[in-house]
Image (cartoon, rainbow, N blue to C red; front, side):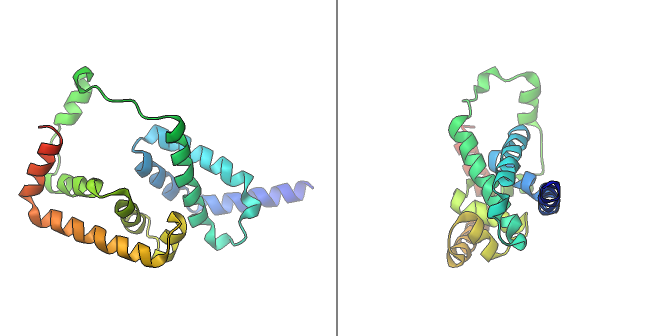
Length: 179
């Protein structure tokens, strides 16, 4: 009996070990908080361990694990809604972070990416950040590969429009931020 447990543990470590960093990066992107990402990832890995026997093909493990992370993130925020931020009660260090100067073009691109609807932003980041194929993204998101291609195409077109607008993007962002 001990051999079966050892084999299961070795299989789990092999499957998770190769993509642990990607799983954390994806969790951090989803929740936008490194501490919460660690909690989400820990819960997702616990859920994956419990349902490991349901994974029939080891080569599908990364997509399977990313799907679990995505669902666990939804569970986390369903039970822990984020508090409203009172910008008038920020500490001096937090205010300084808001006022810090960054690369304007990079910040414009980040802002444009974050303005994309989740349905467009998520497949784009899964492809660009994590290097997933359309079929893998479709499996993770629970949609058809054709829908992934459409969403990627539309996301890129919207980013292209935002970049072409350039200075106009910064003006729109300033208005939407209440500046």
